[in-house]
Image (cartoon, rainbow, N blue to C red; front, side, top):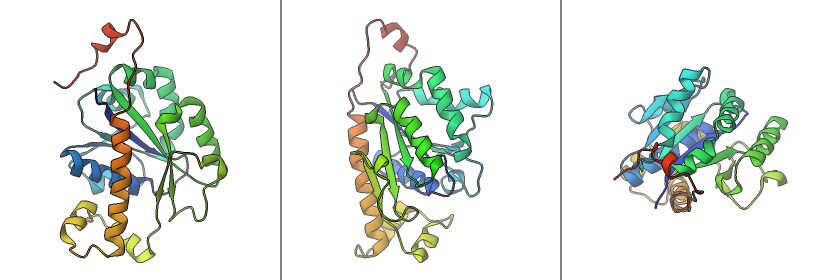
Length: 239
């Protein structure tokens, strides 16, 4: 059975291009599947909600109600791919909550496949956050993202594993162009006839990486241990 994918775009450090990657991933999934649902867990403006208001909901992990509002839709096997733009301020609390409620095991019972896309950094906070995830998250569910616009040069050796997405750096004038609130990656592909432009190739390359990642995540085999069939009835499955 194909799993419902969740992509958690995160970093414990600010200003690493997290919302940009969440935007691109959300637009790719919307183009590929015709539907997608994104969650904006962010304090900084502009946020994912400003770019993709039609498919984005706001969420927080400040209190129990906010946590429930965020987590409840994530364990539903409805074949609607989901993206979480996790603000750096919520990084520690979100993954602490995931461990406390057994989020990874719960999603496995419900045929949901979370993938954590960690935006790499060279600072101590990034190293500490990455090591925390390596201890708590199965290796198959943890992907390092090398945003070359922010992190110049090579990835830190500790983060340069087999599962790495490399986002090429754009010239500053193109970076400012795609940061406009009205800009759409998919819209640019549809309206720009010159496939040789640097931005066209950049978007297509990133969409190709997302496609390969999404295919591997959806086909990830989900195992259920004995005695979980009754528990799995709690999960709403698409028919």
